[in-house]
Amino acid sequence: MAKNKQKNVVRRSIFMYVFAAILAGIFITLTIVTSMYSTLISNVLDQDVTEIENEAEAIYTSDYDSYDDLKAAQEALGSQIIEEGAVLLKNNGTLPLAGDLTDVSLLGQNSVDPVYSGHGSGNVNLDEVSSLRESFENAGFTVNPDLWDFYMNGPGSDYRKEVTSVTGSGDYRVNE
Image (cartoon, helix red, strand yellow):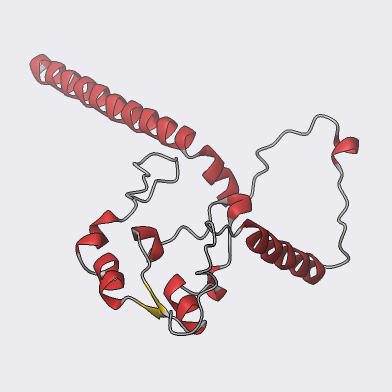
């Protein structure tokens, strides 16, 4: 009888040690995961992740009367940046393309898979963005279909950028 009692105590002790080890492993894993994704978790839970030292100085007012005014100003500024940022190489009389010069070849994997935006302040509404090909065709040009297919479906489609994870890990490279 005493032997059975001793076996039960040993079994309970082993069970408790195993249970405690598993529980410790779970907590350690959760601590690592939550620290890696702390900003994302805070955003999902709608928690403020910044600390304001002097709240009276941290109050900002908008230059716009409404959200629609703000969006209109953002779109106007974006268009201005695009117009001013477009750079052409030395023009030896070829540009702008006119007359019978309507066939164009779009080179590079980014011609079919551009990076339209980033995260945070670089975020862009992609609902209204047309592809580079559509833009050229809407302007009256003919895009080289063989080259386009090379980057969309052919060997050039393997040049895709690797999507980085939420934590920023991954191999982000431009394959040109």
